[in-house]
Length: 218
Ligand code: E4P
Image 1 (spheres, rainbow, N blue to C red):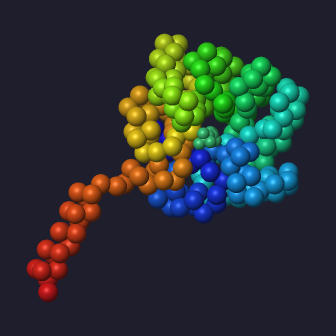
Image 2: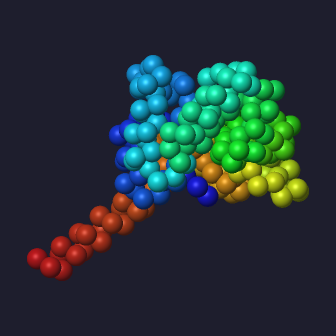
């Protein structure tokens, strides 16, 4: 399972990278705005800065919603750095753009996916990643994990190579549940990765080991 961090915050990206388990980054226009990154030049520079920190794929989202606009923006983003993956929304022109980028050998992440049918279309169009939004479904009392399981089944039935990128992960249990279902990738906040570390028995056990060592060596 690949671990992506879902943020545009450079400190958090560096912290996850230093842990040694980071495989990539996902961003979106809201996450860029949260960091105060505005204006085309600043946004493009920020993507470059992220690519300098991590070794893996970095999703950069287009803001155009028509085919020509998405292609123009996506080609510009892809030309920035070999790690850039063009993030395209699940709309009709987005599906056309996914196929266009597939034919050009440009990696894509199909975002805002909330149904198995949308995921099937993204795979048919050759998306590199499909991003079902787990947390946002849970927010409206709909089982987000079930969507991931349905997409896994469909992709396995036909051997689609599109990778399931479980997105809108909110906490550590989402990560564990997605791993059980067989999501290829998860993207979440730093806290969802850090949470995997924690167990009180680890802390209690380590404290006891160190206390016993001190006793024996003082
Ligand atoms: C996916 O790539 C999105 O950036 C993200 O996971 C959305 O998460 P949210 O629902 O917490 O905003």
